Amino acid sequence: MRDFQRCQPAATGPACPEKGPALQLTLHHLELIRAAQQALHRATDQTSSTAERGAALTDWQTAAERLAVALIARLESIEETYP
Picture 1 (cartoon, rainbow, N blue to C red):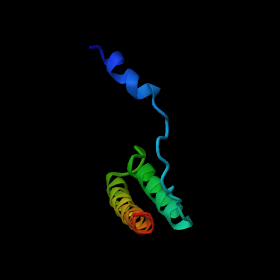
Picture 2: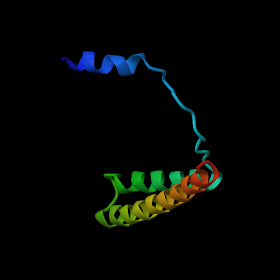
Picture 3: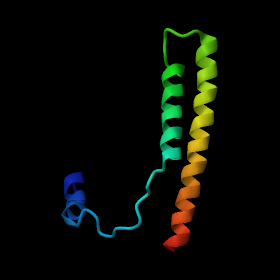
Picture 4: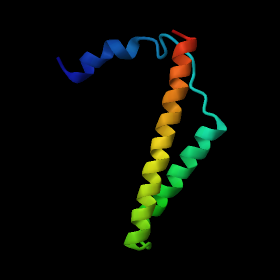
């Protein structure tokens, strides 16, 4: 059976079989996303020094970890509301 034939039954099903609660990002989440994006931009800027890129990489990791923690907390609160 070719890949196309195997995927065909899935393609004919409804696009959203069951809708659950939506994850709504707060201003805090958006600020964390922006901080991570800016730090990643600085970390990959080839015109910066190695030290600047290293510091920016640390900033990016910190921002990404904070974002992950905030999103997990949000998802856990949704799970509690909609078991």
